[in-house]
Every structure is written in structure tokens, then in C-alpha cells.
Image (cartoon, rainbow over all chains, first blue to last red; front, side):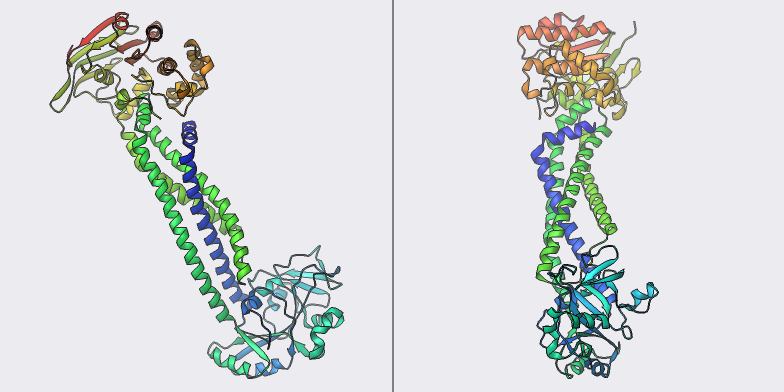
Length: 399
Length: 216
């Protein structure tokens, strides 16, 4: 009887195709929105846990979108005097502050990794970000020839990597944080300064501000839970020649933007889903009247009511299943395209949903649509069982 | 010889409108019965009741010695598949299926598709339709449609073959050919009940019952 289901669906190609497409669009939109939302949500959560800085201090005059700085991994070779750190530590409410020293890898150097990434030197004494990763490796700090790669650094080969002409041992690949750290290479502060000093192309960046040993690029600040963060920011700004990025504000702005965007997309998605469900239900409702003669014939020549149920619900399930699977393929493509478009407009913390999450989402969508399909077919199948088989005696030919 | 089919005092009415009144008849294996009468005399209704397609208002239907008058709907479906083959006024073929697939329909519902396909092909060959096996109903002539419908009715070798106006609208040569095929089923031990206006076809049956305003 499965054969009859296929035959019937193929015979009504246009009807079948239109409903499959409607379901596919509904599933694709839900899949895409859910996956994007999950990615942003995870990114926000993990970045909060991993970065752990309430305020990031960078040199004054840097005209960069804070979200791009925090989450986009943009390279920023600007420096400020390292004694700024001492001034920051004196501000009431600051519980911890650690310096970073930035440089960047190059794209054109044949002894480089080939992409432009931030190289980040950290201070083992005050750091609270890199240290936990090293503890897992039973190390206290990185040697001069050691590097930790951010989760999104694209190129590395056999545990070694060439950066600006020098080979480094890859100690670890950092876990994804959804922040700028994912695009960074972590080395010791001394090593980062040595790299900058030794590279002629990078000299023009620092020479006006003094030797690299006296410079830092950024300070990550933790603020006491009881302190007013605005007062701390005011205190930092009074040091002069610095600017502050309040991580919570940036995250809130991004969250707000995403909430609006996802609500809009979700609204469109909800309408699409409703339209596909309406089409599914109306298609099967009209079957109740259109195919009474066919079902009457089946019953007259020996089909049971259960056979009719199997055929009608089978058709609905095949349509729902096909639509769902097509929708997942389309949704996967939409998700990739949507992510690329969003990233081109806005840097934001994003951690791609796990395969488990995507598999669960896919199965849930398939399950929901199959159940809805079966529900849509329930009434027609019930009516089909009730068809009086004697109607066939008075019927003419039928489609 | 025992009776394959027996109906006792069958009455069918819709409110005060009496369609059949106190009809009784018996049918033996291998015999053909023609039901004749004017339009509206209740022939098709009687055929429906005999074939368990609808229930009588009162009276009994006994198939192979068993009273099946009040059998549940699902049980009646099984009995139809087990005992009856139907040739309706129209061919009533499914347009999404080929000729062979239409013939195979009863076998699929009886879960005996694989075993019976060979027989379905041989039936269609017997009706000179070998070259039309994979054609859909809309590609067949009226005579071919009727023969496909007849092959479908014969597929499960029914004990009782019921035919409602099987030669209606057919030219004399085709009508004769279809009648031959129908009555030939007797040679396999099948009983045949034919509702017809065609006196020539009725004359070829073993018995003729004439209905007039719902009565014999």
C-alpha cells in the first residue's frame, strides 16, 4: 500500500510540491533563526565567562567600533605607556587589572601564517584568562618558543606554526570564547615585545611612543561587585590618553539589536509556519471531499478502514517528512548565509551550535511536522473510514 | 449442493420510501443469475446488499452458510475481499495507476501482491490487453477500461462475481465479449450475479429474476 501513497503523491505533483515547499520554507526559517539565536546566546554567555573583564582600556584616539574590538578580532597595533596599569590599579573599585601587548601576524610574509591575526602577549603574574588553560597543561607560563592558538586561527601544521619568520610550538588550541580571543595567538609578553622590536615592518607603529618594553596595548579590568562601574570608568578616563570599553554595555547593545532582528525574523518565520500548516490542513481537508469515490472503491474491493487510514496519514507523513528534510537542507544554507551577512554588518560573540544541538533541533522539527501532518490527516482519514462503500455503485469515473 | 449465497426477506427503505420489499433468493456455486427490471426498480441496491456494500433495513444475508447481516464493518471488508468480485457500472479505475496496477489493487489490500501479479498479467493477456499493461486509464478505450475492470474483479478468483450493467454503453460485439468473460467465471466455480437491461445478456444467465418496484 506504500506504493499507492507514492503513486497518489506523484500523480498530484503540483499540489504535493507546493505543500512540500511551504513546509520546507517554514522549517528552514525556524532552523536558521534557532541556530543563529543559539550561536549568539552561547557566544554571549561564554564570552562573559571567559573574558571576565568588565572594562577594557585601550589607547586614546583609537577609532574602532567597540564590538569589533571585543568580538571581531581586529588587529590594533596601538600602544600606551605601561605605567598606565599602575594608575588603573589605584582606582577605587578595581579589583584586578592585567595588561596585554598586541602585535599582529602578516598576510604577505612567506614565513608567516598567511592571515592577519592579533598576536597577544600576556602577563602571567596578573593574568586570569590564559592561566587556567596553562594549568590544564601543568605549566605556569609560556616559553619564548611556545604559543597558544585561538579557536578560530585558521592555519597550523603538525603542532608548529611560523609567525613572522619564527617557528613556535603549539602548546594548545584554546576553547572557543566567542570573543576576540578566538582570533588571537597567545605568547608571553616578552616574546610579543621581542617580535615587535625585531620586525622592521612593525617598527613604524611603536617607535614614536618609545621602546616596546615600556608599552602595553590594552588593560583588562575587573570591577568589584559593590563598586559603581560608572565611577570606575570616570576614574580611568581621568588618567588621560585612554578610552574605555564597558563590556556589559557593548554586549547589551548587541543583545538588543539581535533581539529586535530575531523578533522580526521570528515573526516572518511564524507567519511562514502558519501558512505551511494552513496549507497542509486545507490540502488534507479537501481530500475528505475530493477522494471519497476513490476510498469508496478501495473499501468496496476489500480495503479495511485501517488501510484507508494508513494511506491518508501515510501521504501526510511523506509530505511532512520530505518538506522537513528539504527545509533542513535549505535551513542549513540560510544559516550559513545569514551568519555571513550578519557578521559583515556587526561583530558579535558567536559560538556555532554544537552538532548535538543541530541534530536535536533537526529531529525536533521533523518530529513536530510529522506529528502535525498526521494530525492534519486525522480528520480525512476518519472520514475516509466512514465512506459508504456503496457510493461507488453510483459513481462515474474519477480522478 | 449447498448455497453459496442466500438472502432472506430483505427489505430496504429510506424513511417511508421502500426500495426493496421482502426479497429472498439463493445462489449455487457455478451458476449465473441475472437481475432485470426497469430503472429505479432496486436492482443496484439489491446488488449492493448482496455484496455487503450496504446493509438491509431488515432480512438476512448468508454467505457460505454464515449469517453476515450484522457483521462489523471491518469484518464485512474482509468478507468482500474473501468472497466477492465487483464490476461496477463504470470502470472506476484509479487514474494515477496503470492498467496492471489497477488490476492489482485488490491483491494489495489482501496482502498477496507478489503472488498474484503473474495471474493479473495472464488475465490482462486473456482480455487482449498485454500491450496496454502500463497504460493509464485515460489512455484506454471504453472497451479496454471495462476489460481492465473485469480483470480486477476476477483477480482474487472470487466465489461470487457481482456485475452492475457490465455491457452498458458498449457496442454489440464488445458487449458480447465482456459477457463471455463474465460468464466464463462459472467454469472456475464462481457464481455470477448480473444486473442488466440487456435481454441478450440476461438470456445467457442460468436464472433470471425480474424486479418491479422493489419486489420480485
